Length: 328
Image (cartoon, rainbow, N blue to C red; front, side):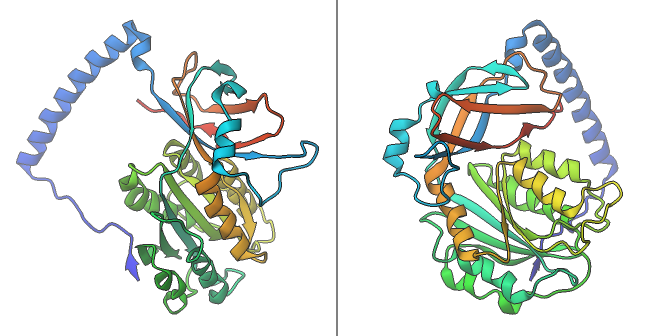
């Protein structure tokens, strides 16, 4: 397995230090000018905001929508228009600039907890990447990463079924789970370079337990939300049995916040894995939309809660729970 941890180290020289100081001074001056201009003209501080969401239609509005049997894409496009949706950013009504289906290819990273005490075996873990082999669409690619004390690449991005079906011999169960550090490395080394892809998905196979990561949970969740990464979870039985933990969410709460906070969902590893993977892939192809707006009347340095509602009672929407604070 190939380690994802970064090993490069920068050793400064006196010349490098002087150049860095000069660049910092220039940036400081330019930043002051830009900040002053923004203060005089608040409209220039607006940022285009893209919000990914999932749209599903329920025929019987008195019942929850079915897990399967979504309408054809052309039917969705005829029914859903931006005038049928209202968006509130931190309680402030926002004008929707555009709303359209997202047919672009997906980049999916399956992140597997392979720590020693995880309450499942490597056969079940290996079955999850294998389930993606017949379900991914043309253009989609899947990477598999395992983690314990550190994350390692099990399978590079691929669309070849044999690569996804042959991970069993590469898996192991050892050491403790540094979940937050694994997600941080996946974000920085895998997801950020894929900024050109609107569909960046993490499928986390875990019970949500983290032991002694230096990276904090709030930072991970904020980064995922800021980058519009959608997290799905294949949930393993909680090895802590719901025990309270200092300074971090309980494992069950951790998975709930990661998925609900990013617009994803939770499935059980003891359920039908093939069906769960099929639904994840179908959502990306048939139900994923992109909504664009320019935030007005809000303070972007604060955490902002989002609310989307539809005039059409048959429309069911799922989206990330909030925007993280934007740091200038």
